[in-house]
Length: 112
Image (cartoon, one colour):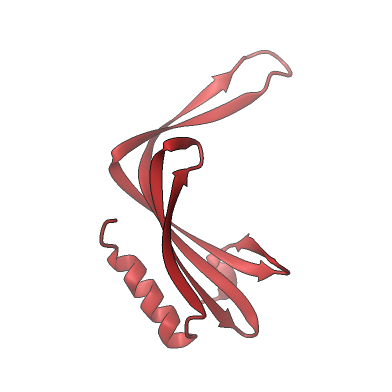
């Protein structure tokens, strides 16, 4: 796993402002390319009585998206991602706990 200074700054800022309820790291196969692996770092924190989770995903970069399907009426079209296993990309996702599930939200909704 590559050193990620941006994630360290995010985690430190949240820990300083709200405190951490839970944190950890794991790895999992890429959803549409099971032969590739992505690493997930996460932190869980409480803000104003609500529980939030931030995930930082490090994995192979998407270098192309292929459209697969026919050009006739009613045909379904699907997208297929092409990955470069040597190039690394990062994504950060924010979730809010709703009942027992995590619901994805826009970070600007927090007003930070």
